[in-house]
Length: 79
Image 1 (cartoon, rainbow, N blue to C red):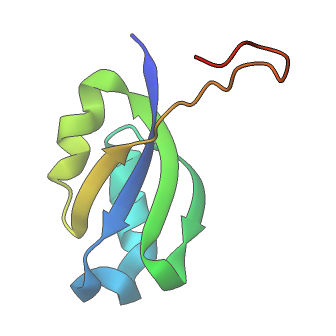
Image 2 (image 1 turned 60 degrees about the horizontal axis):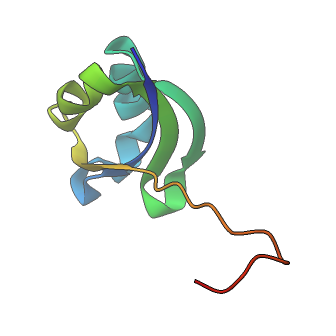
């Protein structure tokens, strides 16, 4: 299976319990890489099949895959 990088938004009502939300995310397969607690954001990755499970974790407001961007080399023709 393929790994997907994610940004998870924590509900305002759970901002004071972010460590608990992180534990729940980890228990269903998310590898947490960073927590931006004051903003209610958790950054990490998981298997593609687990994304929907993360959306149903108590305290999660939303789950967004992180976009991938590929810049052309500086000497490339303008598209």
